[in-house]
Length: 326
Ligand code: GLV
Image (cartoon, rainbow, N blue to C red; front, top):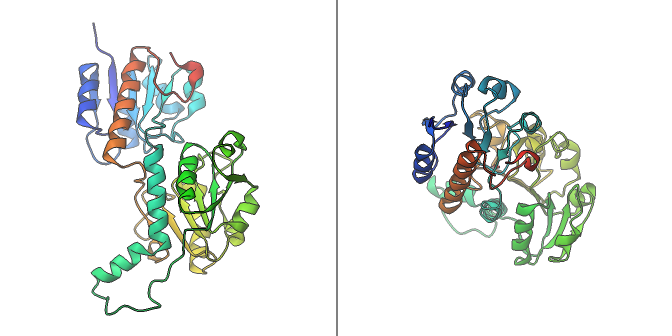
């Protein structure tokens, strides 16, 4: 019997590449960079399944070119704003993602970014490496305290909740805003539900954990940044376009807010001449929040299993459009 044809658009853990190639006819794109659009469109013709990344645009054009035999789209990420889910659902194609396994790792990363920004760790480390450390000085590298601060979380999903759990250990007052009030979570942790404006005005720290959609695009823009405290720190581990980058640059430059820590940017990667890179109060890392060995291994496993389940018309372990799961 012919094996199902699959395209995997980047290397994942070798064990899971082996699992896929044992169970399919595999076309693996091994470059570090994503396949260019024209190459991707050529490669999807006639495939039964695709394992893709958030850097691959999976839209109706691609699904049409792939053909009606396409049985599964398996994304190695929890977010899926690069995939047109409605078009996949219309074609009865289940879309897999990798939630849960990355929740705690991403919450840890949020805290790493926050603590580094609050205490100017990357900036002061650069200072030492540049040979500028001459003495201990009472006024050098003053930062912001996190303990007992008011911690505002926008998006109280799985990751937002894990971030909140860690804030308890720092004696923070936690307020949150979400389109859905989470009374179930309020029973477990001291979380206070507030509207967005109240959160912006009162928080010392604001951490973003929303999905990216039409409603959250530029959720944090000039107006919102103007409402924030001048000692505040904005952390974004969600998606770059949730923040209006130009407005953020102006707010950081004019010290309307104190610092930002970004795991994600708009666009990604951030261009080398982006003015945000010139600011000492803007810490930027290259979208690495889920990048621990254990988590990326688990993400490789789930996405590989979703792919092979899907091409065999078996139920995906995690599916973002369960109405068309097998
Ligand atoms: C990473 O950003 C993810 O969505 O998993």
